[in-house]
Image 1 (cartoon, rainbow, N blue to C red):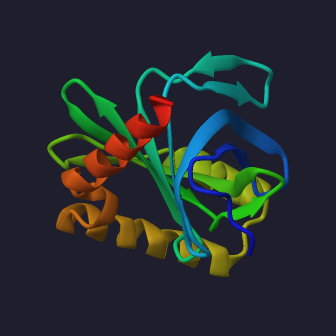
Image 2: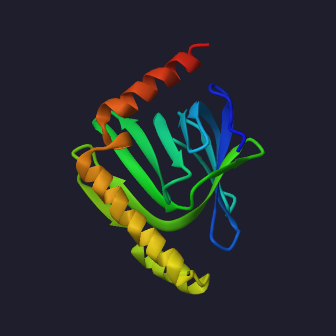
Length: 177
């Protein structure tokens, strides 16, 4: 797989299971890219919703995308600490200057004290029925919810405070150019 260059801008594009465009983030700076993961950062980037609405992110965010896991993690740096938003999603692909994935509705919101809330189970159930998610996909997604919860409890990877801080410092060096 071709990966973007460190320091280059990319888009983030999410789709739904039926192939419909869901959401696009205009610009994210690549901090690290390998065949198995891309780490990026953005701050006050424009976001385009599939219904035509747009909005701008409010704070710096470090984004972690994986080919091994069925989730991605966004660490948002706020005054009261790091808040995480975890999307249960397909592993990413990189093409045409964009990280692309399928959003499977389930999300985990993690607070600075590492408490968390599972979100959008009703939306997941609705889309699972409407879009006819196969049973094997349902098992994969729920297994990844469990794996993500385990990472949160163990404060592994992005859930180690220093990990996000280190990537944010690197992002600031790119912004100073």
